[in-house]
Amino acid sequence: MVLSKLQSDVLREGISQIMGESKDKKRKFTETIELQIGLKNYDPQKDKRFSGSVKLPHIPRPKMKVCMLGDAQHVEEAEKLSLDYMDVEGLKKMNKNKKLVKKLAKKYHAFLASEAIIKQIPRLLGPGLNKAGKFPTLVSHQESLEAKVNETKAMVKFQLKKVLCMGVAVGNCGMEEKQVFQNVQLSVNFLVSLLKKNWQNVRCLYLKSTMGKPARVF
Image (cartoon, rainbow, N blue to C red; front, side):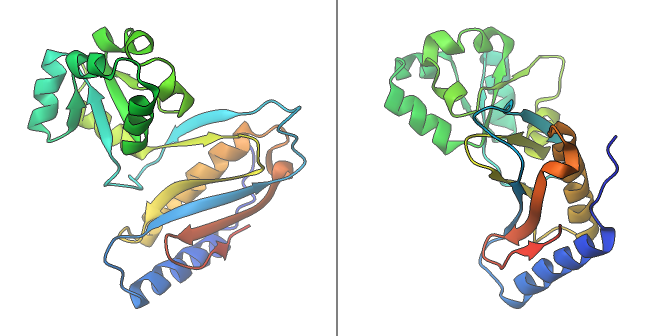
């Protein structure tokens, strides 16, 4: 494990600042808190582009939209949980239409799929979900669907594309400060472990709420 260079007091101060500002300017919705990352000494053309997901201790976006691509049993469970779902018939109707698949990918943050369906996704939908970075997560019948949905909501994905900056949701302004603190710490340490030269690749870290000013934490 790489020793964390994230200073606890600086991080706590940043979180307090964001939470304070959010309380002063009451919004009609709960603001999401994003961790914004700037990298350095990295060449996305030459260096290996990394990708990794980590489960946070506290769900950053409780309202995150998840869709179940389910067999009959999973569709029934999804109905009980008021979870959006699609069955094989619904997927067949899309007929690999790129526009429809793109629209579906845009509508949800994440997808879950039953075993019987996940194998058919490339055939039914083409590469659209994969291209959007939203290929479904497998759910077996031995697992609790509700637990899987919560686990999906707690996952954050770090993926380097062509630019040296990225952002991930690490919390929201309705959480306790210490929960945001734990989420940020875990996210940062995980990200750093993915980087070739660890902390030497980190240029800066900011926290920002949806409508607020960014606070630099590294």
